[in-house]
Length: 293
Image 1: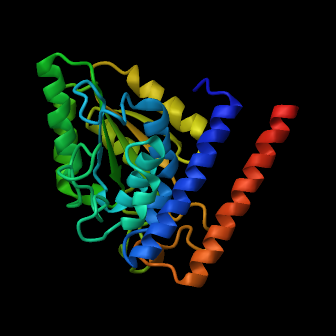
Image 2 (image 1 turned 135 degrees about the vertical axis):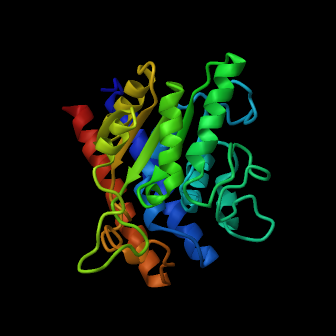
Image 3 (image 1 turned 90 degrees about the horizontal axis):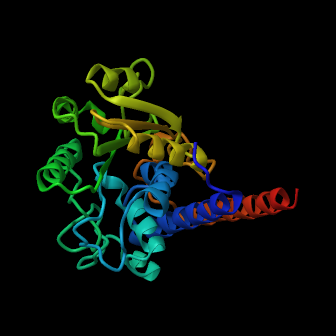
């Protein structure tokens, strides 16, 4: 488990609320983009960018930085929002999301956006790129680590499992995967009921020789503890399976596949932002009372 104090945890919670606000406002302004998947991976991304990753926002091409690949590239707005909060670019730039000539494109583009280590969007390909980076670090005798976030929907792609086999074959212990396991994909199989995109992911990755960690993907202590544990694993790659909720933070979006890529109306945006504001107030009050106890 992590050794973060309550003040740090509360600060991460405040950042997460701001990130969710950025996601909703940006998609609404653009009248396009994804919401469900970005909202589900917020705590995972905040934990990476504000705790685990060795990075320098003022020097995004630093050769010894840790690398991060968002393989589920359709969640780009969540990544941009976290990176903006971390200082890679102005928060105000998020308002240009998905506009022509903006650095905030609908999917990450490493050729135009500072701090993006890999262009993604075609699902299933990010892990392969991460393996190449991890192998490159080994050949260059550098100690940077490589992190790849994948989605459970994209884990239906055969390339994910070919890559999983290769990473295990080369014992890439400088590679860690984070699975945003929200269990709801865009459409899915609906006969007779909706099915999980992928079942028993821990057992499947264990069968490929990976070290697996399952955790609550919305609990900062649990996520950061898992990231720290992954760093200690030697001789094989590690995967953190973050159990998350699609649309997390907005009650009428949670666990609903319809919000995978739907744009909120003006009224829905107002309702969602009001919920997030209420949540932020409750968290601040709860944190203050705990500090006094």
